[in-house]
Image 1 (cartoon, rainbow, N blue to C red):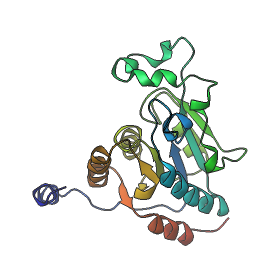
Image 2 (image 1 turned 90 degrees about the vertical axis):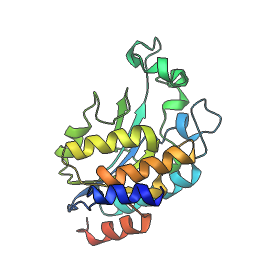
Image 3 (image 1 turned 135 degrees about the vertical axis):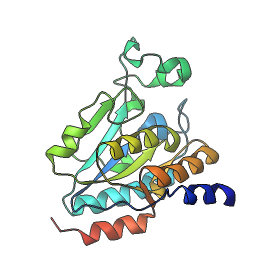
Image 4 (image 1 turned 180 degrees about the vertical axis):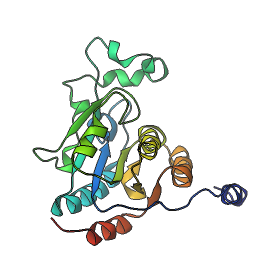
Length: 211
């Protein structure tokens, strides 16, 4: 962002820091093969972001905190996709039962870790994610995944509206192009969540109570 844009946001008093809780969860949005495999219609190379997210997820697991995944999957007839396919027909590859819907194995998903099936951008739209977080006493969310301009942004907005302070480690989110990625990180940090480094997230996790 240019200096004029930054000054406008600062003058409007955006970008303050949220108060973090003591029981975080890691929410990994759509790091599934349909998004992380460059050969997929809507995929791109998100290897570094997946690796960074694995580091954060493992740190949370070591302390006994929840790690939750989301995936996008539609029935064979695609009727449950609504009108989204009119804007993004490449999503038709996200058929339930296909490899595209599977969580990327590089994240080492563990037995018992929730995988939330969603049909829209936000991880909360039409899902039981809020109930999953509340039932485990989660008071802060570490948000990772793809894409920054789509499902990450939509989920960050809903997390704020539902009262969950959220950290977005910038190394753990990705998009198909640099410009929308950077623009949305800037705006997410201004209005909805705290965009921070992986190291800051790891320090935060280390500062919380152990298992």
